Amino acid sequence: MKKFIKRLTLLIITSVFMLNAHAENMKKLEHLDVHYMAFGATFLTPKIAKAYGIERSRYNGVINISVLDNSKEGKPAKHVVITAKARNDLGQIKTLEFEEVTEGDAIYYLAQVTYSDEETYYFDVTINDGTGNKSFKFKQKFYVD
Image (cartoon, rainbow, N blue to C red; front, side):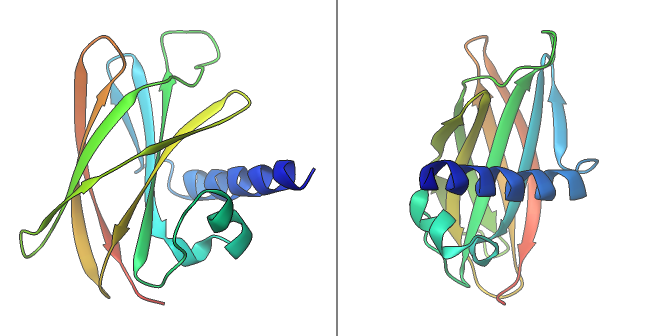
């Protein structure tokens, strides 16, 4: 039961972030709807962070990506392979390593990046769903709280 509550809490947190930034944080890539967000890890409760192996720190960000197949009824979640790099204003590049999380019908991918106060990262993301690579870019400014 505790495991279910942890998963439900993370799903709710993720949904709130996605609803608040829906218009700006979704890319249509052919038959895929890609929802993405980046936020400080301190937004997660200690229990949720621990459950997903996320370091909860003022200097740690979480990148969350989910992919839906818009060519099918109900736009089901899709298993994909995600590769991404994050570049800051100094040109430093970090390769992100995503972990797949599956909860019921939901599938999302989580990665972490460390940052300094008011540091902006430019993310280059490539998604392969078995039909080829699809790419998009976004940027996020992080703040130490």
